[in-house]
Image (cartoon, rainbow over all chains, first blue to last red; front, side, top):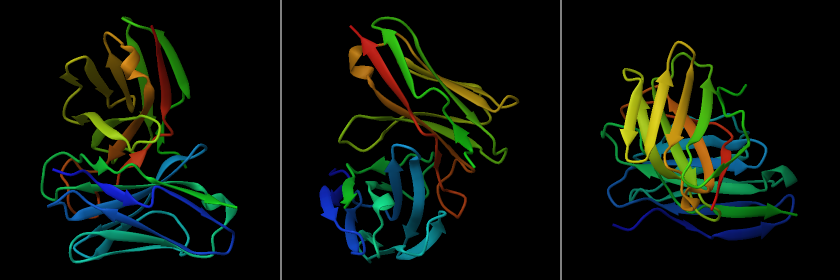
Length: 114
Length: 117
């Protein structure tokens, strides 16, 4: 089974721009979560999507948004980029209904905002 | 408000010795705990988990201990190997079972483990 894939792997943007990141979950996984990893804050939960609906949301401003498609692929969008948005953005998928909250992570997208 | 805390940013041990990574939490609603390992340029990979109804879970060289009254858990790696060198994240959830709005994982900031040959 192919793992979670994320594109692009690296991205450089300037302040004020917007960016869209993509995530393809493991086949059969309908839940997709997004996390932001920074050196100072560790992994912070952004949001979770299940069956094209946002089911849970972390404490991030409205500039961070996402969506999920019918094939469970998910995109995350950040508008009006700020320097502090530079981070590794990780996507994780899991199989709904299974015991254990094991999530499978992708390799991440490294976003640099200049 | 850091609900999951890993107070040691780094830990260095000799190959063959025991590595002990610690994690504290403040949210009494947390019911399920996980450890993830992360190598540079890769996403975190699941290592081991423990439900709040247990106080110990073992998987090969890895053992996780949970002390609910102290809101403390630890990961023991015995014996430590150079390939174990990575960042280890402790994570917690309000529910062991996936589904529903309680699912969200809350992570600590991680501990960089270095195992010296």
